[in-house]
Length: 274
Image (cartoon, rainbow, N blue to C red):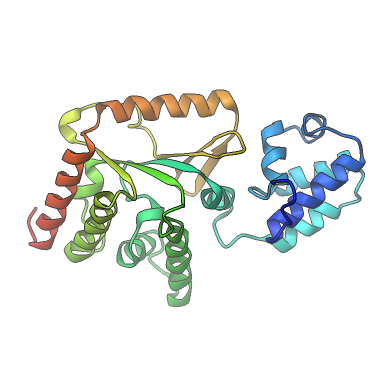
């Protein structure tokens, strides 16, 4: 947190209090991380209000600082509206200076339209409740609003061609979704690259990934699978993810050619073509 900046959000207040208690205990971030059994980078992100500890880490923080369950109890009041495995990554998105994401089978959540997101959630939850479905879609669309601000994060979007071809939500929903991505690319809101089927094998075939960098903290990487996700802040792991992204990006089509591919795919869906 910048010097002189007053904490505003509940997460920032949580982090600010942690910093105060740590400083009062005459402990460095490194010393506290040893007690919590985590990286100093995680402590830094928590104190800056970017992340929250998981319940077990909060208990270890209390033990290390002698705060008698204070941070574990406070954590219960800060439950996220996102799935547990994604909650920390969602918070970091809002604070990132740059986001580089790769969609292997789906359009990344930050870029999804209402109809596309609704179709995705319907597929995941066939016995959905309408109010729950609406809540999930609203939460996903709210994430994307960080891209409405021209001073928001610089975004690199790398898509597998499979994302363009799979007809999620029907032809019109797909056409709307792809036109949105192309529109954003045309006005310079994101850099767009497509890995075509003809490009063959590439370094990111096994997983989606989102890489986030910050002006005042170390970068992080997030990967996700079915009902699971992993946020990584270990420098070696983040560097490996970044190298894989860079390799895949070098195999992708240019921004100009990728924009043309996405527009063409949108028009094919629009006209019901396969």
